[in-house]
Length: 122
Image (cartoon, rainbow, N blue to C red; front, side, top):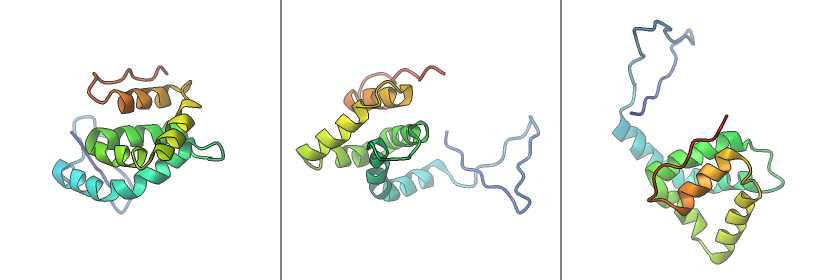
């Protein structure tokens, strides 16, 4: 289940254990939005694996994993642009394979039909 929650004017969300905020956007609408924006946001996300990037792989990998699960064609579209693109992006990711989030993402990219990749160890 996907839930998107925005805070009110006071920027507070109820912390009552018995109540969850109501979703303000349904899953179908959210997936439609993702399908429209993912081709635009995926290429810069792969830039996070380049040596000169200052991006947080801890944040980028879960975003790419979610897009891969919902809109895989956007991720594979970036990788499959050319042989150069595959080499550039996959080699850049392999430089960080020791980071659990990166290794889990790589498993999901290389083996898309396998069971879920192992969760990174905290």
